[in-house]
Each structure stands twice: as structure tokens, then as C-alpha cells.
Image 1 (cartoon, rainbow, N blue to C red):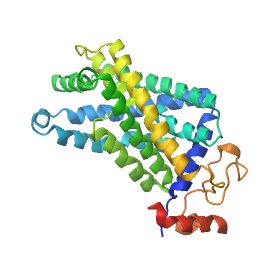
Image 2: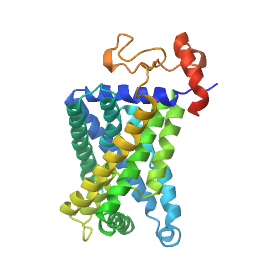
Image 3: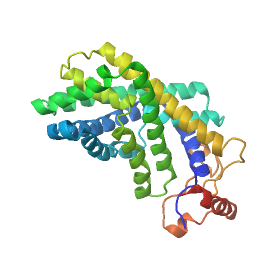
Image 4: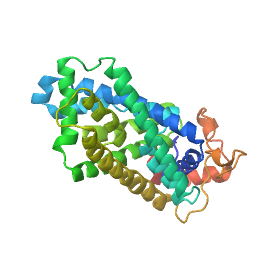
Length: 314
């Protein structure tokens, strides 16, 4: 009746993906991070453009933030569906693999570092070359919104507030990635990614990679009171630490504990971890196809799916 992976299978897929990511060549990880930073920066620029609505900012600020939040998720959808790497997503994927004892802590931390610096490089490229020299926000109304948006995040907010909002941000972002992994086909994946991402933006939470665009573009436009030092202290450190807690603890640790800890090996479409001749790089998922093809897994795998469908809520 349902055509998605149940929560236990999704947790297994996330763990396998963490193994793949943690064992990918470092240069590929870095450039994957650059790609993700560029793509998310485009979405951040869209948020700033949409928020440049003076009447709404004065009379209905919550409504215009909700509208901009509705369009922002296209960035994360592109990132997930193209396989690019956000460091915030890595906080969940690789942590899940570490909890599952499939990946070393050292490889996890290396992946976090490589994706972080890749994300920063991609974001700064869009800040300076595409929207900076490109003049995207040079007109007065847009410049004012860029500056006001950054001041709200960096000047008005206190350090502990950015940290706590960072937890909420990556809790939702990693849920978006998790739900995206549960879908078997394109539309389901997009829907799974879209709504948690919308939630984090609509609530004004702090995402360390999004801040790699929002704050540097404000510095580019000479926003008073915001410096590189302030950005690092209040835009990178608390948001990054909060994002680690949100992704590695509130999502990865919880779903590992709930669905994988103490459980037998979970089959994905009848394929065990490291099976099908694909080694650790094989997520075990079959190519997309019609309903009958997707349900043609081995009898034990079908039995497992049917037993869990009612509680899965898929």
C-alpha cells in the first residue's frame, strides 16, 4: 500500500550513507562541499530578495518571513538530490555511521572539516563574485534588507540564543535529509525535504552554512556594527556548535537508539550492509521503478516491510 522506507530502514540507509561519505576521497568531499555552499547561497539570496518588501516588514513581518521560507527549501532539495555535502548534514550522516561502529571518529571529524571549508569557499564565491560584483543587492531597498537581516542575526541576538537556534535549525534540516532518504522516488524526496526546511527558516533559526552567506554579504555591503571577528564569534561558533548538537544528537543519536541499537542487521530491499557485491559504498537500494518492481524484494525483506508499515506512518 505504501511506497517508502519505514523509519528503521531509513535509519539504516542514513548509516550506510554516512559510511559512503566518510570514506569518500578528500578532494571530492571538499568540492562537494563547495557545490553545496554555492547552491545554498542561491537559496539564501532568494530569501533576502523575497524579504525586501518594506510594507510587509512594517505591517506583517511574520507573513513575509513565511513566504520567503516557502521558497528557500529548493536549495536543500538540489543539494540532497545531487549528492552534494553540507557539513550540517554530515553531522547526522557520519555520526550515525560512528554510532553504528561502521566509521571511525577520525574519519567523521575529517569529513566535517572538509565539508565545512568547502561550504565556506562556495558561499564566499557566491557572495563576492556572483551577487557581490554582480550587484544583486546594490539598489537601496535590497541593501537595506541585507543589512537589517544580518543585524537581527548577529547584533541583536545573544550568543546563547544563536546556539539554541542552531540546535533547532539543524534538528529540522537533518530531519529534512532523513525524510528525503525515506522516499523512493523524486516527488516524495522533495516533499520530505521541503517542509522541515521551511519550518527552520520560518522560525528564524541559525544554520551555520546559511550564515556563511547572510553575514558575509552584509559585510560586503558595509553593514555598521558587523565585522569578520563578530561573525566568527556569533555566526560561526555558536551556530556551528548548535548545529552539531541538533544533527549528531537530536537526530542521529535518537534514531540510532530507537531503530538500530541492539537490532539485527537491517535489509534494504533485501540487501544487507556491504552486500550485493557493492561493498560499503552500496546503500543497498534498488533502482527506481514502478510499484511492482519496487516491491519485488526477497520474501524476508517483504515480511519485514509489511510488519513495520503500520507503525512507520509512511
